[in-house]
Image (cartoon, rainbow, N blue to C red; front, side):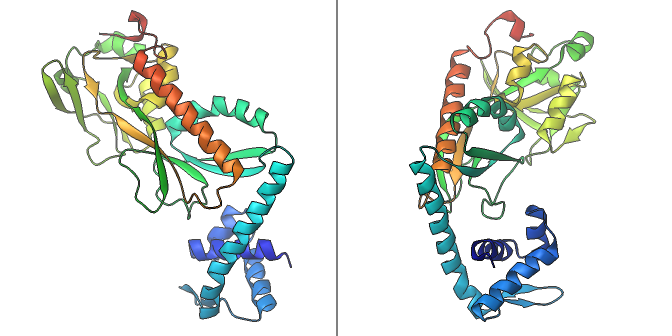
Length: 313
């Protein structure tokens, strides 16, 4: 049997608690995963799992194997990376968890990275929220908002904001708000990502302004909100990375230039500094560089292009 593949299947079954979940993520059959585990049990001469129709749990022998299996897989990964370094380049797959806005921003940039490192490959896992790097099998992820918990390594890489935007078609028909309170008379596209999706807060010349916005269309997917704004459905409040290219191409206009919204900290997170493969380190450095460059461009206005064409007031 292939001991490394068997141990990889074993660890993923432990982490997901499901044979079928491991089969789906590895694009194989559940019977193949079951066969891997059976071969491991035969190889070691022990039973690794207690199985019932409703529950899967580790035996004492299975529990003993978990730590040693993880150590062996880390050593195998380090060995592969050492060989990769000897060949002069990082090699292998890096799974990166990103939001849809970050994905849209980064995809055009990844080409240069992959051309510089032909042995490197990147898989983007696009989710509005990623909570568990281990369960998702992620090597690194981007998170926005509060600092992640201490169970992961986190590095602050940029502070980004939001823009109030609408498409030319909507503005031609309904006009633009002159004050945040005018939003009550407009159709707004509400993101349900947070608990207060319909509560928008702005800071203007006279201080904070809180507005309750409504609209018949809501979504928990920011790409849906963006697409609705692009079609001229209404006004949306979206993150800078998600709509930066729409602003530059005049598909969307920014509104209320005298009012700003809250800014969020962006973090790059990964499970551990220990045994960090060179391929993962390359991708982490790439993410840090790209987002810090973006923050600088946004802050000094070069990326938006500070001219009347980018604002509609």
